[in-house]
Length: 432
Image (cartoon, rainbow, N blue to C red; front, top):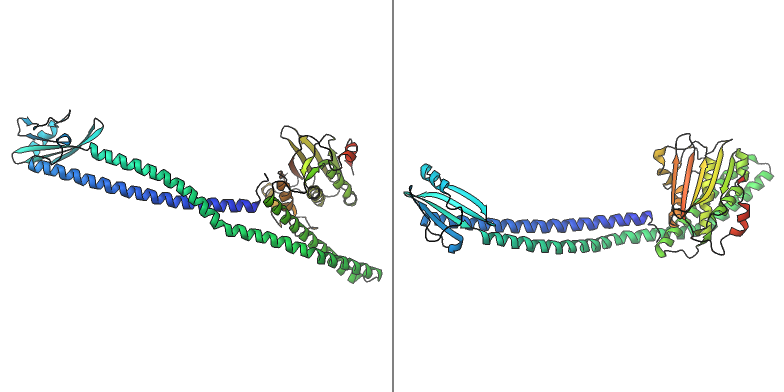
């Protein structure tokens, strides 16, 4: 499975946030409904118990089942438990004596035997009456309500999750469709612009040659700037088109139809050879270090060739004369990957910019040749679309190191691109 694109991650985060918000709203509503229901039940039961106790104290009896209530009287010398014997621990003789002495009623709760007894002790004439009420049935009702609410909460949580996912997908669907239309527009526009831009570039080159042949230096300089501008514009269009194709390939298939087994070491040697003239003109040493036993990787040869070429070109752009660029390819058997490392002795960059340099249209200091474009952002898209990773490490004035990791093929198959032709050439490092 291909790694998600930045747009996919944005959509996924949006779906998760919407789903979480919907689930949270449902959970809050369920909790509020449960709290209100429990509060109403609790209030109703306490009013019932208070009424039973007040009736018992006033009339000397409780209009309820004898097993749930008891009336105890105290005349100052003896305690009368009534007809039914109260539970163990009752009556509360200390409360009877204190109320008899002070005349101040007391309400007490006693928890024992798995239930709660509500006790009211109050003076009634020349006697003190103590009403005891067993609330075991009321407590059972509360437990039953909590159990029912727990079941309802579990069902509600499941409904919240399902509802959140459905709502999240439907809410984000227009955004996903808009992103797809944007990708199609970029791909279509880039494709349609390639031909006229190429024609303008070719025409500008022709006019520039004619101006130089006519010794018109002013016009030749202007046309030379036009040639450079049209070349940059063509590069931007190519990058936009490649980016759109990479995204579309990730959306439509887990394995791209144009994927082959690519010899990454051969691509390194090719890129170093292609930049030989530029490196010599800048006075920069470029060395390719490749292992003849590096396994191939699965991918699109043209896209990976672009990655290698751009990394080498980027290193040359930031390396001063007498500097050095080293490009190495090795196999990391423990991780099952092929490692491509491009190191230069240039000015480097701030470590805090290690991720920003992969942002679209980012331009670091000293990059005069390439002022616009997707640059390293496109390289990261290419690498991630191949299931790999790319990282940059540097320090100001300490050069930069770019590391690309790509999944290696388990065993080198027949038909590896340029593997047979390049294997002997990779026996020794190439140095320019």
